[in-house]
Length: 128
Image (cartoon, rainbow, N blue to C red; front, side, top):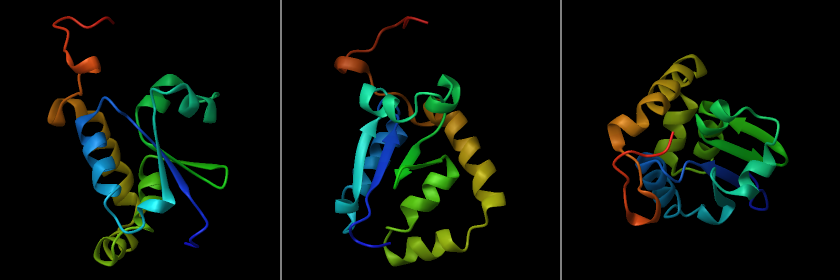
């Protein structure tokens, strides 16, 4: 990936797994090639106005040169900026494995890792 190309990564800011993953990515040597936007922000939503809400909130999305890569495809784009061992592992991972694995983790991410409470306080009965 050329240094002038930047990935815009749209992540779920209420997901503990997603926010921790973002924090790890920010520590990579290549972090300057990544911008992060919370899916909950109007700026992020404006990048994908036609996408239905379930698909939008159900995965991370990566925008590169105006093209959107969602779920496992976005993960593959990010892994091109990863440290060499991770980059090699990703290059050897076939999409037919990455696709269902990503979907399985995304579907269970709140149950397994939890949610970040908005404003620092959690509601016992959140609004539907």
